[in-house]
Image (cartoon, rainbow, N blue to C red):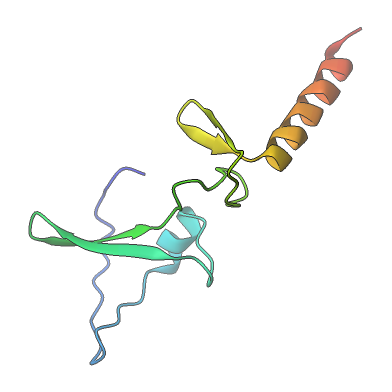
Length: 95
């Protein structure tokens, strides 16, 4: 996601908490169970959706046997679903 200003200003409460705007959470597919990583970079505080290094791009499951395709991890379950969907689509496209 490309950085861009949302024009939204949020305050920090006395415990140091900031509420992330709903629009941004939705755009990033974040739920109440999502994790974020927080770090300082070039004088800014960066809050980024945390994605485990071995997490599936589609379902978020961490699988040791996930394959890497064009820089994205795909777990065996999602790969099977994609393959089945592709096979089903090929049958529909044939005369």
